[in-house]
Amino acid sequence: MINLNSSPVQLSLRQPDDWHLHLRDDHLLKVTVPHSARIFRRAVIMPNLSPPITSIEAARNYRQRILNQVPTQLSFTPLMTAYLTDSLPPEVLEQGYSDGVFFAAKLYPANATTNSSLGVSDISLIDSLLETMEKINMPLLVHGEVTDPGVDVFDREAVFIERYLQPMLKRFSNLRVVLEHITTKNAVEFVETSGFNLAATITPHHLHINRNAMFLGGFRSDFYCLPIAKREDHRLALRDAATSGKPCFFLGTDSAPHVRSQKENACGCAGIFNAPFALESYAEVFDEEGKIDRLEAFASEYGPLFYGLPPNTNTIKLRRNEHVIPRNYSFKDHDLKPESFVPFHAGETLKWFAEAE
Ligand SMILES: [Zn+2]
Image 1 (tube, rainbow, N blue to C red):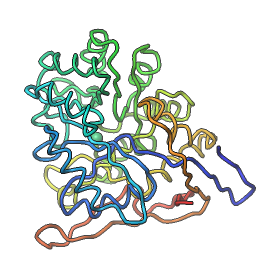
Image 2 (tube, protein in one colour):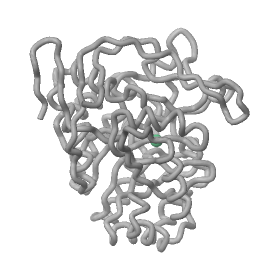
Image 3 (tube, protein in one colour):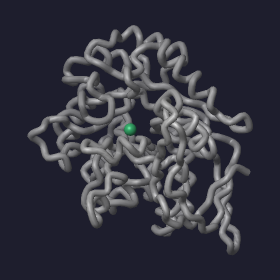
């Protein structure tokens, strides 16, 4: 239902959802939640807190802490996920899913990314969890990277697909799986030809940057994320996939803020805070590719279709209106020290601006 008017271009599109989001916790929720709730109606909330979300009660409480920060005039539904571990009892997943607390479960290979040290050490150890999920039709969300230090960091997604994902899908062929934040043409090809119940989310940053962004004039930690940005040919394959109109690819921002002091550090954290202007960032890509008419399906329809949810019925407005992205968002940390998040596209001009209708 995109209506293309004459210049200045304005689109009305079904309100989107974010199918992969990190909001962090405690005092940071006050900063992160309003940015996502401004545009997105629902979001799948990642469970990699410290400690991670491994119980129904923890998910319920976290959901409430998020809801407490939703601005009163907005509607925002956090869809909670369980964090899989080697020892998580399948009954917890089953109960949490039937209670409507867990929307899905997230598989982090142990030590693959932020707060994943308690993740799954060996996929063969969680057969009973996967069997249960397949039986109750609970979606599995996968961080698809091997953690083997012998595998080059730029190859870890491709190796994961071959070594773990493909065999897992063969063994659990009815399991609904989302390969999150794909970064390679290997992943694009695998997902579109898999024949399984498999889809993938694509972030805005992987559509905009290749790995050079991290090294432009020095080390630029703002562009360091996991999975790490790859070569240009991979970025181009992702842009083709996102704008292809294929329902197996949909929006998931993987917005993953870290405070400045944790980004600029001898061991800087991985993650890009794209939530403030995520839809605008995607719009830029679809526009550049001449496929702005396909943005609505990618952002607002293919996700609900995969998850078996009704798409949102209300609409938002996307206007062609150049605006400069703030250089940072400042706030006080829990010790009342000044901190900040630097958003994706900081200081850049974006051509589109989204707002509620
Ligand atoms: Zn993530």
